[in-house]
Image (cartoon, rainbow, N blue to C red; front, side, top):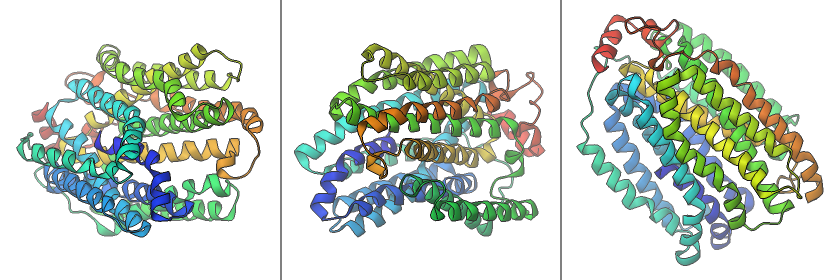
Length: 469
């Protein structure tokens, strides 16, 4: 909730921040881009550090650093300081996010992960929905710096709680060292990928900066894969890389988050530039999505226990795709309830995908790999929205990003953009069909599912998993 609130309230605070510090638009954008680059590039490495040194310790360090960076931003005298401290905040955010998932994995066996993951999903939805309202109140009455001051006591409280929690310490007998060369290659690939996608709304897909950035990503990714295959201690353990449930869950989360956030990006411009609603009115129109995410997460956990990951993921993905496709058919003369129904379907579908894929990806990880798996999951959830927004912005060519014209032109392109995003989500049906039929990824109570991490893991990891369960 702390991380989700920080991101959403910042969007409301950026105009006032720009005015008070005399910053340019590009500089203000870097307060978000710098954070995103730092957090997306380091999540897997942070998870690996937690597997080696303890997730409780990494969580404590990350949340204290997050609070300290927030205080620094609140005191920042210039936009340069804000950008640098936002990047530092991203580093700390990368530390604390995989640790929370790993601690859940250490505490709950795979077949009972649905409920805590559902609570986590509902909390994130509440934070994301409340962020613009809370941010607006803080900025109007206390100024933009209050947006960052509010993080400090919350971070201190979480740090204190982290010291009191005593999760089971079920880890393999020997934890591999972190290969710094592999870690640096992975971080570079992710930075270049996110940077290329962030630039798409401004430059387009066929511009030289985008093509050169994506080409560099491909070349370095090939180098990384070759290096990881030869490494004795790869950044992503081979047991994780070969796990079908983990890989399928990652692909599903990438497709679903790209579709959802791309659709929200498009809908925001539609509501404000075409329907001429103010930010509060726009937020009320999107409220069914937030409500169904909050209420749908516990129901998704129950469905996961009853029907298994495969059926739940297929249903959630189909709901999300249908909701986005439903938005594409709306026009300015459409009824409010039709839009509300589309947003509700999107919220219910995304909550189901989140609970199912998160429970599967974390539940399939043995304790010794829980951190790196959590980092992979969070990486997908950071890259997916960036990809979705790039697709939506290039398809609609919104005035805010530079190239096209009027609200009417945007309204005409909106349907195409949303259908593309619905198709992106529909691609998630393929990895969803690869998820296990039963919760926990087991083919039977005694036998691991084919291709699962448990099957690939060494005997000490199997024993640790069994002990944890």
